[in-house]
Image 1 (cartoon, rainbow, N blue to C red):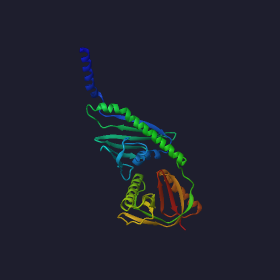
Image 2 (cartoon, rainbow, N blue to C red):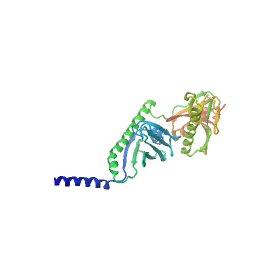
Image 3 (cartoon, one colour):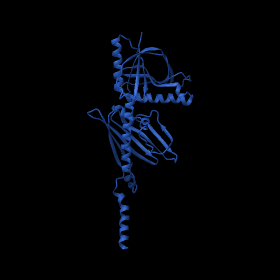
Image 4 (tube, rainbow, N blue to C red):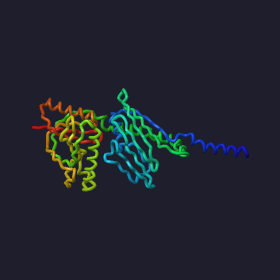
Length: 330
């Protein structure tokens, strides 16, 4: 009996002392290699709406309220959720550099101060390696025990998320015939369009500023049309960016939607009538390099054909692809 009591005391002391030697925070990471365009992979981490297609920050519980920021990509973007039991959380992008890294701040209920980072490495063979990390906030004694036993679950979730993303990318590539490279330039006759949107001016050399401005404008216009004026989603087409001026120093454009609906012009929003034109058009990947090259190819094609291109142009954005139109003068 005495031995049993001594053994129980040793076990109890061990249980009490064990957490003291455990780390106060948890660091886990997983990695995966993708056969895909680096920008495509990066966008799935930098856009929280796209990220929600393959990773559930809020767990398996049913969300009673899910809210994305507008725009849902880039530094400052957030996703908030809550469950039927009243608990919720949020994820916010705190830092990002295209094709290099995206940093997040995470809150789960009362547990705040967790961070995560996705690091992108383009390998010599053109594949993209992603290292995805998670660091928990520091916890006090004796909660290190719970964090210690959660490590394996956290790593598993990260790894399964990366694998699910690979499945999603491969599915998209199969449906689209692989990544869209510069397709054949076509000459088309475009009918007149009525665009409703927000005019913006951004630095031509700041891609982040441009994409943030476009995202914010599209979010405001969509909300105004659908939520405030009950315009049916079937009555709007886009997303459209109409460039009044696009040069080496600045972008002057209207971002919005083609629509036949008639709503009052709200301050900061306007209609733009685009006449019927003969245009040159091309569809490419929605990334800076491919779009820049597409404009060069369109201008070169026009010169070879003896066409005169107008200063204006427009883009119709469809997820990872963008269709560019440059109108031709007489």
